[in-house]
Amino acid sequence: MEENKRQSDKHHIRTAILVDGGFYRKRARLLYGKKTPKQRADELQRYCNKHLLDKYEHRYLYRVFYYDCPPAEKNIYNPITRKTESLKKSSEYTWMTTFLDELKHHRKFALRLGRLSDSQLNYFIKPDTTKKLLLGELAVTSLTQEDIQLNIEQKGVDMRIGVDISSLAYKQQVNQIILISGDSDFVPAAKQARREGIDFILDPMGATIKKDLFEHIDGIRTPHLRSIEEA
Image (cartoon, rainbow, N blue to C red; front, side, top):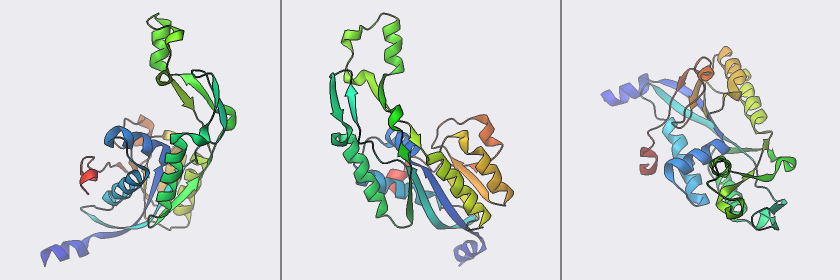
């Protein structure tokens, strides 16, 4: 009986969860390891659900907005193999395509997709490898596929996040916004949302964030990282 009373005394909050997809995938891989597209999508669902559990608030999920870009399909020259390769035939393309399709089947998930910049699509030598080259610890002829990385620049993702934050705030569709990201580019949108009375929470998934973010948010919360796998 007392437990029911505590539940009824909680503030009822309508919550929108916004996920910076590129950031989430990178952090999730670091924290939870490699997974299949379905496993990663299910994991994200569990991760978002953890945000709805709060000691003082009864949070209702308005929607999960997921921001990312479809995988690149361009043909690109690989300096290691010295061959032109089709990115559409790569395992990364297959994984990402399947992952986005999996998310579409999850309840209350809305995908907001930008695009990749073709002009900025190229390979570059990883920083650690560049350091070894400059120190003479590694010869150029010894470079392998592990020493290079594909440079991919996203277009339109940050803009979509900012627009949705503003829209949710102005239309008073939610009381609370939880942003899963570690980027300070969203400070203007966060300030605007707070002026409209929105409770703005940032989840950097345990990553270090810039100091200017603390001033313009209402709190930082990362669910217990180990508990995600147990949910």
